[in-house]
Image 1 (cartoon, rainbow, N blue to C red):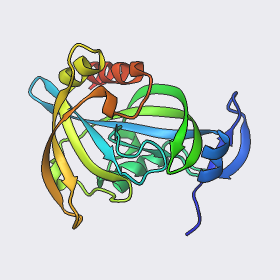
Image 2: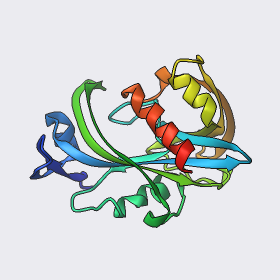
Image 3: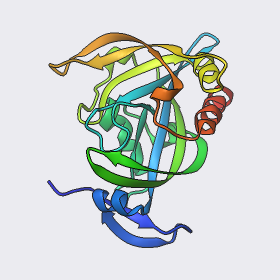
Image 4: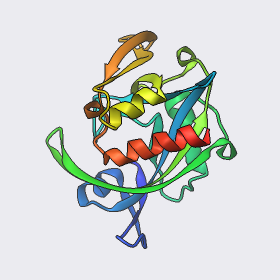
Length: 210
């Protein structure tokens, strides 16, 4: 199977051509990604959903993360990147249903499985109201090992440092690839390490716009 290729950019986002996923992360090329946070409304409360990354991922394995996210393949547009929702979660949505939440730049470096990486991403961030029961999701086992939801106000308090953790209810893939119910207590340190401001600002935008 051919390795994924990404459009790559310099610091000013001028196109440089394409590179494989491994080259992009090894050499620290800027590339584009899609972020989509799913939320569910229950009366006056908003519940935010997030995923648990598979332990075999090349970056940030085993961390909690955005509900669905992914790199844009070479030649792909942000509109087409909505495919990530169906691929990772089995959720079918159109680009027009998404609520734009802004664009961010992130860069980090580290080592996973003995390999150094430099990850430089420009990400368009979206929200989507989704009342599909978690038990009806179809998780992409290679990418996602679980999906959970917590009240937005609890997650916000956690990231702002006003609470040590938040309670999450969700589903996880078992050894047979079947979904089973799960309850977890999650902390900010267990999420993909980003500027905490990203999580706080995104949650506030979800609260105000959805």
